[in-house]
Length: 140
Image 1 (cartoon, one colour):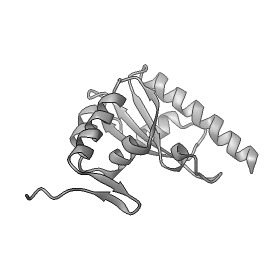
Image 2: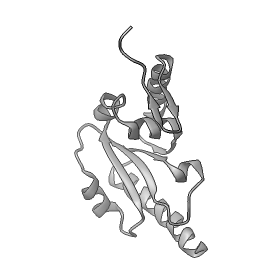
Image 3: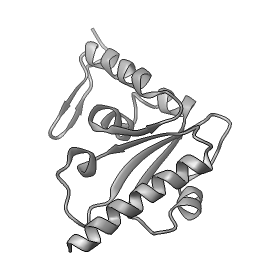
């Protein structure tokens, strides 16, 4: 079982390098979920938020086929820069990735801006609980 785990980790690093090369370094990758929290099982997948430039429009399947040659168990969530900021208040995937994730590559220099946007939401009363997100009412 340990050998499988080591291969997953090695192959995941290869996947990240392929993605970075494929985007000429202009991509942001955030690992989140159990792998980022270090409480994963050997067979756990890698949850990755991939943020691509606004002028790119690759979808999840296209990216996995192109870069995941070693068939790493990756659950890939793909957004363009404009989308990740537009959907931050409506996507628990983006919120979880920014709150609990680890930037594994930030070629678009977005991590600090994402953290700042999340801080603004927390300042408005947003909270993450064990069962999900608490979003304050818009009514006074």
